[in-house]
Length: 289
Image (tube, rainbow, N blue to C red; front, side, top):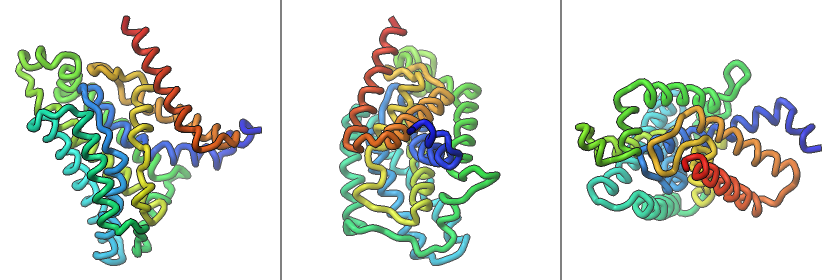
């Protein structure tokens, strides 16, 4: 029975680990969606950052110093790529959907070009300890996911910036009249999601100790958006919680795992995710009426 295998501790740990990769990105995506935007480029960004990080690691050589520098570089690169999306939407006046759809293609193409469409493998012996390591019996990526959820919750609910994000998503014009720098807030939400992409890229590439440029991060944007929507964040902006996103990511991870255990074709699993998103959005519309 699929349910018997699901409850095995090893399987539950694996579910949490898999959830953490897209869940970390979903936390950043929550800020973007609450502010009234969306980012379709996160999956391609994961691949690009992952490839660049492994190239940097191999250049710096073995040792923990190389790992530390590369992780810092990944966070900086993710934030920088997020800033590109932010500038396109705020200064370029391009809608977030169109801007990030374009950068999704650009980032993926750059990844394939830089890597020569071949798998990038890390030569650093310590790098796998990051994504594949454990602390107190729980995978490190899961701890990072939980820690970022706490931090994100504090920012969203207990800082002026968090209140401004909600205000911008609710009504940008009213936010402007309230002396909120709407463009700055909107821009920073893209930087935040880029930062989380950088961390996710480190966790994923270190777990595998390699990056496949064509497959890395594939459909991560769908999983991240689905987790946010399932968690109750409104796609129209203005409302949402980080803990809702955490729950949404876990629900999505459980669904994926159960489908695998039941032997459902991976080609059909995207259909199930799409239906889950549709149901969640329809429930939102009914709730908001």
